[in-house]
Amino acid sequence: MRALAIAASLAISTTAVWAETAQERLTESTSVLSEVMQTPDKGIPQDLLSKAACVIVLPNVKKAAFVVGGEYGKGFAECRNNNGTGWGAPAAVKLEGGSVGFQIGGSSTDLILLVMNRHGMDQLMRDKFTLGADATLAAGPVGRTAAAQTDARLDAEILAWSRSKGLFAGVSLKGAVLRPDEKENADLYGRAMTNKEILAGTMTVPANAQSLGELLSKHSATSNADRSKQ
Image (cartoon, rainbow, N blue to C red; front, top):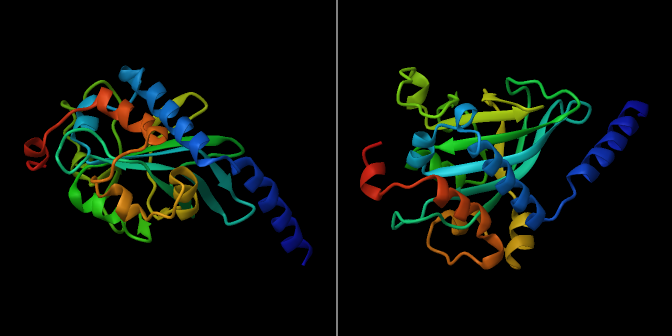
């Protein structure tokens, strides 16, 4: 009982760190991606971002070893519009998982995932999405361009990166679970919305939710014809 009480206390104190508004978290997600893209020699290859169907940003993922023995974080996913021009609205997601191939320790880590095709995009619209099981997953390459990369990981449906203590690198996240965060969606949009509704690429993006899409449009561009070749 004493152990359970300690675990509960730690869970409460840790949750308090994550108690941000959806708007604040969206701003933070946009800032994380902006900082990464401003260091192209050590960041995400821009040609990969231009080919991505969706992007997921999870700032300040926490190690919750005393609570569930894994990681926990919240962020946003955003997919391209159906017409191939620009990006849609951000949908809130939360990450839960056991051992996922990287050590956070007592600090926090920013995670960025690129979803490279329609199948991976469809997984985001489900109620539960296990990385590495429901879609193939690999650590993403780092650098200005991925054109010289010949590794089979570039055939993966999802590529993942982490940034912790100034270091940015590809990361393995197999076994971690992504779920929609309905509470955050309601907070951001003022009404209940599912991730399937948001990520369909047909809704008008409200002014308070445009920051991440505008940044993605700045750093990536592709057409439906280009993506159909993937």
